[in-house]
Every structure is written in C-alpha cells, then in structure tokens.
Length: 243
Image 1 (cartoon, helix red, strand yellow):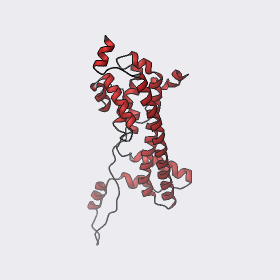
Image 2 (cartoon, helix red, strand yellow):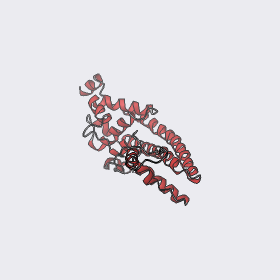
Image 3 (cartoon, rainbow, N blue to C red):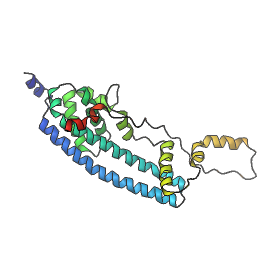
Image 4 (spheres, rainbow, N blue to C red):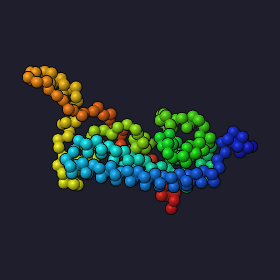
C-alpha cells in the first residue's frame, strides 16, 4: 500500500534511473574538469609571463582567474566523490524514505551544486530526483543554505562567486614567484592602503605648486569564506564502501 502511495505522489525511487543519471554526471564532471584544467594552465601561464615582464600588479589581478579555476576543479572533484558514494549506497537510499544522516552531505551538496553549475544538466536531473523523493522544503534548505542543510562550507566556498581575498591572491602569487626565483615588488603596502586613506593623508599635507595626481588601483575586497573545511565522515568512508 505504501509503495502505491509513493508512486501516486511521485515519491518512488527508481534505482536504475538514478544510477544511470549519476554515472552520466560523473562523465560530465570529467569533461568539465578537463576544460577548467586547461583554463587553469592558461591563467597560470599568463601569471608567469607577467611576472617575467615585471608587471607584478597585473599578475596579481590575473592570479584571481587561476584561483577560481582551481576552486572549480576542487568542486568538481567533490561532486564526483558524492556521486560515487550515492551510487554505492543507492539501495540504502531506496529503503529509507527520509534522507539518511550519513548521506545528507552528499545529497545536499549535489542539490546546492546544481544551483551554481548552469552547464551541468545531469546535476539538475539529480536534484529533481531528490526533490521528488524528499520534498521541496529539503531542496530549498540546501539551495538557500539554511540551518542544518547538510551542505559543507568547503563546497560553498569553492563554488562562491565572490571575489578572492587579497590575502589569498598574494599568497598564490608569492608561491609562483618563489618557484620562478623572482622577487615580488612590495605589493602588500601598495594594495592594502585604501584610496580614501591616501587622499586624507594628501589633503593634510601642504599643497604643492602643481596639483598632485593619483594612480591607485586598490580595491575593497570581501573576506574569503572559511577554507579547508573537511568533508564529513560519510564521504571519507566512500572507499570503505567500495572495498
């Protein structure tokens, strides 16, 4: 009787369909990973070329593209891990009408990722399957990152559209310049002093005979989301289920 009601209200879970869509998602992730890997290498090549030419400020700007591509590569890796885990535990999903706690991160993570990856149609299909299974409220909780949604902060940070922090850009640029044996200009001081502060200082000083000009490219950069959050034990145990 309960199975008939599930089918009537669209709550039935077709394991074959889910496995098929999820395997396609894994294949799509591999294709996207190759594309973003190429973009990452192009961006890194640009950064090294700019450093060689002495254009350190431009290299600092370009390194942001490199970081974003690297973040996307990390996110795609997490998506693949989630998909593999759910395929291995598909019968467990079928037997439980509620989302299992040990799979909540993976399921919620894929739902959230589907709302951030427009070029990933298989993720949209997976999202619809789980929305039908667990309801619109479960879906909205993951997409809107409500309390106890189960989405790990790491994938949120990796898929964030916010600008990379100045600290993270400087860190990556220093690592590259060290590998190349190039000494960076004192970018920290030039980029950390806000334009308004420089103007205030200038206004307090005696005016020169000719008007002073400014050429400051500093920007206010939002702080970065917390990084290096670890995946939950359910994802770490993926290899255990596979063995």
